[in-house]
Image 1 (cartoon, helix red, strand yellow):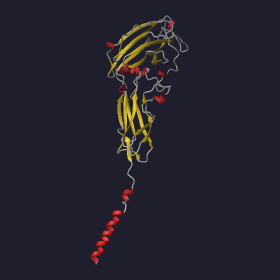
Image 2 (tube, helix red, strand yellow):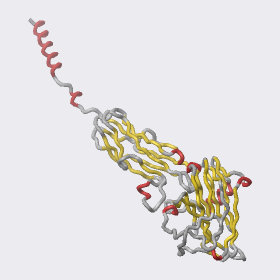
Image 3 (cartoon, one colour):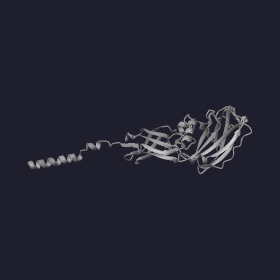
Image 4 (cartoon, helix red, strand yellow):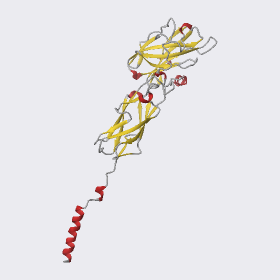
Length: 324
């Protein structure tokens, strides 16, 4: 009897174990871990559209929306508004949001990088995850990414040069470029020291330009000036012997102060073909004036509040023979 009782008890105990739920079955599955695929990325302005991936370590149980923030020295279109020249644009339908669909493990932030007419230091785009609308997802410590945007290397520097102040007088000149019917670049430091310049990136493609060389103020009469086109290849200036140069002379009748409004004074035209400037016209000196119009508030004059095409940058470039 003792053996039979033990056998029956064993069967009952086993049956109870089979029907009792496991404690582990009641525990929720650990959340999926969310992070950026990389923490550091290096790109170039000329790369155009880039993609930044956010990843889960296992498929999403539901559609999730991730909110993120932007920072860094580069400026996006929304932040730039009408005050500054933007460096990039977020192409996703919802600004500062990215989605990962149910069953998927990745979401993508699409960024379009802009080549511009400024010479500047390498810039950064910093993106940080702020929140996710699912309790089934955990944000990890890899919640941010820094994108370094390298300055466009190839292109052409357009330099407007005139005499240093001296016994014969002084002058302040400005340089403006128009692509088609749109003003795209300008350099207008308030200084009688010579040297206004802009940078035309090779990635701009085939474009027709009109140039305006403004005699803003001064006493030089005549004012002899020179325009120099210097190609930049892989960050280095071509030898001076390869520069394209044009000379012209203004007189007092060509002066236009900031308060003067007049018709457009494009005095030279040229084209970029395959990223190289060509098909130059000579410089046509207007019978009077040289100004295009009042421009203090034009957006292309501002680059994060600072004109990056500064004389200090120009001096360094000409001295070192490199743009970065």
